[in-house]
Image 1 (cartoon, rainbow, N blue to C red):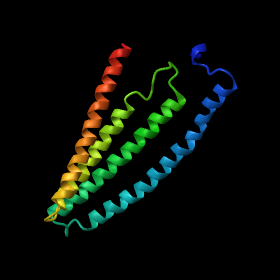
Image 2 (cartoon, rainbow, N blue to C red):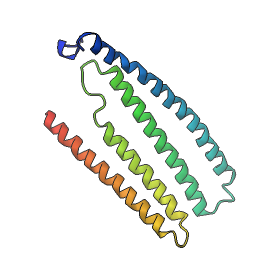
Image 3 (cartoon, helix red, strand yellow):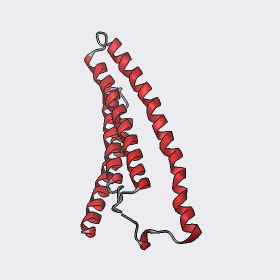
Length: 162
């Protein structure tokens, strides 16, 4: 389907602005390479955990598993950003907004990653470390509040569109 006249940028400045999207390819490829490097780090964590399965106590095994879960959540966040950005770069043929809801997905991922880190802090808590835990809980609650506000704003925006 052809783009309407309203969707076409006017003149050389508009074409340059639209063409500047090509610069984003560098970022997408960089994130893809970073994800591959992170996959190697994940594999190293997995091998270390497997090699120590008979040595680790339950708490250490749980911490190792939380580390793997954290890595998966971070990897999913990177993939979400890359795919959503790529969709908006290419743009759906029907002109729909392919990036709708991305902020909520990213915020939800950050909340989940923060929760994993908070669990790890609780498992590794030492006497006298209450202040660190308290600050971490406060930061986590700020992430949760931000994610909730973004979800409300996204929902209100969706209702306004029809």
